[in-house]
Structures are given as C-alpha cells and as structure tokens.
Length: 243
Image (tube, rainbow, N blue to C red; front, side):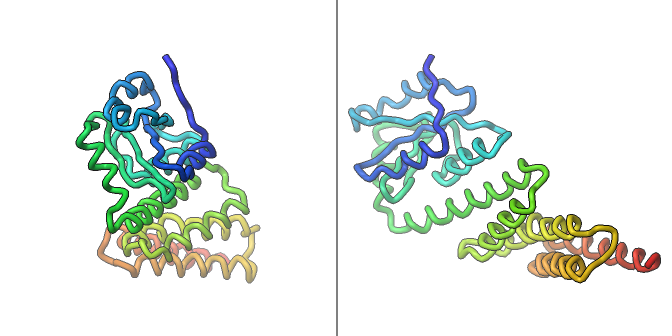
C-alpha cells in the first residue's frame, strides 16, 4: 500500500503554486492513502488531472517537523481527518472532510475561493497556527537555549500585538509564555546573588505577570496570575530575611 509523506518545505511549495488550485489531503498517522483515494472520486470527476498531496499528521507531535505539519493543517482549517484542502495562489480557502466529499460539497468548497471574508478568515487561521507553533516549541525544545528563548519571546510579543489577538489570547500568552520565559531568563542569569541585570529581569517578569492578571482578574488565568503574584511576593519577603 502506498504512503506519501510531505516535508514542511514541500508543503509550502505545494500551496505556493500559482497555476490553478492545488489539493492536499491530511490523514491521521495510520491513515491509508488508498482508502483516501477512493473517497476522492468527486474531485477526480470534477478535475480529472488533479494531483493530490498526502500529509500524515501525528496526534501528538514529538519534534518540530511534525509540529510544522500540524500548524499547516490548522492554517488550512482542518478539524477532521481525513480532509481535503483546496488552495490557490492566495493560500488555502476551503476544507472538506473526505467522509462528506460529494459533487455538491466539492462545488460549494470551490465557490469559497470568492468569499468576501476569505482574507480575514485566512489571517485568523494563520494567527492560530503561529500560536500553536510557539507553544509546540516551548513544549518540545528542552532545555531552551538563550537564542531560542529570545526567538520565543519575540514571537510571543508579535502574537500579543496581532490584530486577531483577543483579550483571552493576550492573557493566555502573557501568563503561559511571556512571564515564564522572562522568569527563565532571570533564573539563567542568577548566579547566587542579585545583580542590576537580574533584578531588572525579575521586575520585567513581574510586570508581565501583573499585566496578564489585570487583563481579566475574574478569568481562570487572571485568578491563577493573581495567585502566582502573591506567591512571588511571599517568596521575596522571605528571601529578604536572609539577606
């Protein structure tokens, strides 16, 4: 039985072709291409010369290569596996679960290329894909190098300032990403005694924590940030007793 595995680079090339639509099928890690091909008959009838790229997705990524593939599925709007993704030179514009692929659903999907809010929806999916990649890197790269910390901090700040970022997004990013990364920089720089640089980094981390808390003090994250701020306050008070 044939299996096709795309690298991240080849997937980028696939969605960048400008001559007409391109077609990508996302499968589970154990999904068979032959089974998917049988469900693609409506596409083959509509576009006899269509060529499909097949991408297998892991349910749990173990490296950044797999995470990039998952992020591209998020960017495409994939919510079920297997699914067919339609794209043109402007990017992915429609997704159809293969179990629901018919002549009618394919025609409706192709019509989505001209939808008025297409660019807006694509931008939102790109935002969620970038957020996924950031947290994938935080979870997979252990330990983070100083350079990786800086890259993650920059990515986090860009996401927090993105026009698609909601209050909940900014609070989540601030508490689960920005604050821990700044604290990691502080910890890495602490060599048994405070210096002006480590003190400044600690204050920067605390400011990020307080900003996340104050975005919505009644949310779960807001309450967790409040508790963390109080923990830090208590810890610093105890530490001063031994200075």
